[in-house]
Amino acid sequence: MKALAAEFVLAEHEALVAPHGGALRELYLPDDEAEALKKRSASLPQWTLNQRQLCDLELLLNGGFSPLQGFLGRADYDRVVSEMRLADGTLWPMPIVLDVDEVFASKLQENAQISLNDIQGTPLAVLTVEDVYFPDRIAEAQGVFGTTDRAHPGVAELLDRTGSVYLGGRVQGIQPPAHYDFAALRQSPRQLRDWFHQHGWHRIVAFQTRNPMHRAHRELTLRAAERVGAKLLIQPSVGRTKPGDVDHYTRVRCYRALLEHYPHDQATLSLLPLAMRMGGPREALWHAIIRKNYGASHFIVGRDHAGPGKDSHGKPFYDPYAAQHLLAEHEEELGIGIVPFPAMVYAANRDVYVPQTEVQPDDEVRDISGTELRRRLHEGEAIPEWFTFPDVVKILRDRHPANAPQGFALFFTGLSGSGKSTLAQAVLAKLLETSSRPVSMLDGDEVRRHLSKGLGFSREDRDANITRIGFVASEVVRHGGIVICAPIAPYAGARAEARQLVQAHGRFVEIHVSTPLEVCEARDRKGLYAAARAGKIKGFTGIDDPYETPVSPDIIIDTSDISVVDAAARVVDWLREEELV
Ligand code: PPS
Image (tube, rainbow, N blue to C red; front, side, top):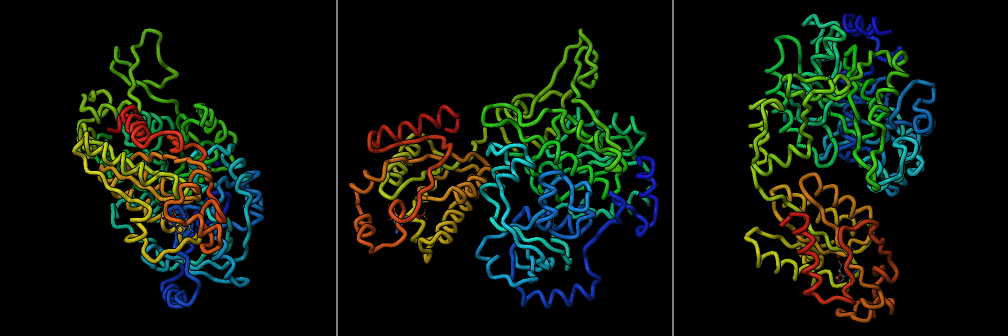
């Protein structure tokens, strides 16, 4: 199998064999048919793809997800979740589904076609809906990620930010999603295979990453390539990675700089528009299949591949070598050579990088973790040359200037009358008293007068309101600012969405103002509870509309047994402890 994989790259396109014996499946229609479908798509139900769906669609359309020909229907989905296989037995570890809300799904006729659009409304593809089903998302989390712990970013997304209905069916491509950044580095599988062919590259080992690369990565990739006598394809995921990662613009500038430090004609760089799920071993298997589709003959699997970090008890979700074991088990069937590699560490006494497993007893081992690197950048401390290259450090320092304040959002949530706004005002005053950093306020009532004018209190409107707050908050945080939000935000899903938006750029601090309903109702400053009890206001939170209590907020404050001044001091003290102010 391994020898064959190398030959595929040399063959003509039509003869190119993707994994599992199938051809590379590109789902784009010929130009004239695509043009006709584009015209027709305007009259179909319109679905705006979120970022994950957009990434998935791009890889479906360009063949990166061969042999898939669309979003999974129920039979494929069930078997993928339980056995990592499509209904026909083909190895495929990750459910690729189109999740939508119930309102949208309920409007679809049998065998409906829907237009899949980007955020600008550009139609990219048409889905013929062959299956509409309600997944058991708890079972999916357990099956795919081995856990239902929301500390796992893939689980949090699945349980809190994934539509409750899945649509399965074939997809016909109209045009690829537009990318204006690093366009010259974004090859499709076909383009990459062509490039390998033109350059006489027959054996290619692919390297996946979601982090900036340093000397250790260079050593690891060069050794891996040497071990299997292959050229190197550095193919970082740039679609969506783990929340809090270095943004891909910065990373790609780092990769380009690093590439200059490889021997001539040994390595190339190409970007993968993949929305990672951080699914550890299963994800590694998926990565290998994708790289095979892109024309690689080998794939490097390092320590803790696609690891999501630690669970809510502080334990790693997966054994760091579980991915290597799983891939080794399936190597033959995958049809791509697996190159397992331990972490590389620096032996200072010998001034060399060595695999962790080859460290000698008298070696003086040095390593700098991602957290330590961020600390050094933040505090303007030296970053040694043994660790990385000066041009890479410069890019990272330009992006993360020393001592630049970190943006954060204080997100107060609680019942009407719980004291959110009063507390938010008091915290605002305390912050302004002690620091010259600007602070923005997004209070519930205030937001509804401006940003969310016209929205009501249906679930849909409340969710839209919180998403708007999350969006504005994320922009403030992105620019290193402080923002205080104080809506009721009764639904966990919308809060999770706001968290996700903000966490892409900084900290999201959730403060549950947990004042009990009886106290809020007794206060009834605006007379709204009385009106709600009298049936004059419908769908009032706490009376005839739910408030979903936050599961693990950063701070809980019940204003029925603490003064506003003390409560504000608690929040500010917490921020100091976390070194946010
Ligand atoms: S939400 O659910 O987060 O979008 O609500 P929010 O934007 O914070 O708006 C809450 C304020 O609107 C008033 N109001 C209602 N609240 C809850 N339920 C219903 N049906 C309702 N209708 C009007 C109420 O004054 C809330 O203000 P606060 O400051 O929370 O008391």
